[in-house]
Amino acid sequence: MMKKFSAVFALVLVAGLMSPVHAQDAAGAAVSALVTKWAVVTAGFALAIAAAFGAMAQGRAVSAAAEGIARNPGAADQIRGVLLLGLVLIESLVIYVLLVSLIIFFVRAGPLGLV
Image 1 (cartoon, rainbow, N blue to C red):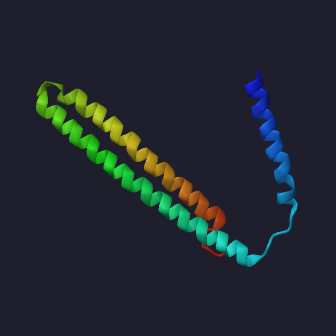
Image 2 (cartoon, helix red, strand yellow):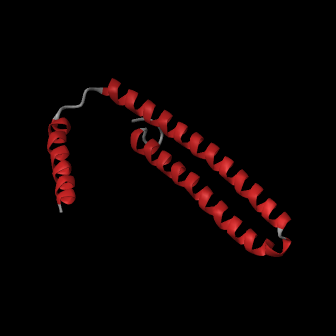
């Protein structure tokens, strides 16, 4: 009960402290352009990191599956099924990062980068 109360209290405190920040006027177009630029750069780096680690994970998964099939050829069908499921899940994480990057880009930079 105390943990729940502490969590709710912290959320209310943060929300209360953030209200004056949102009530302030915008600093200007220069800050908006800077934020847009860095949001797009950050999204690009996130996608690059996710793709790199996803590729490494896929390589390790294929290597382990090939080794498992070589050791026990009778289990090739089961190993292949688990391998495909693992590859799909690994690739889905990279696709999620791509979607988040596109959302950041279109919210911050606008559809044509004009905002």
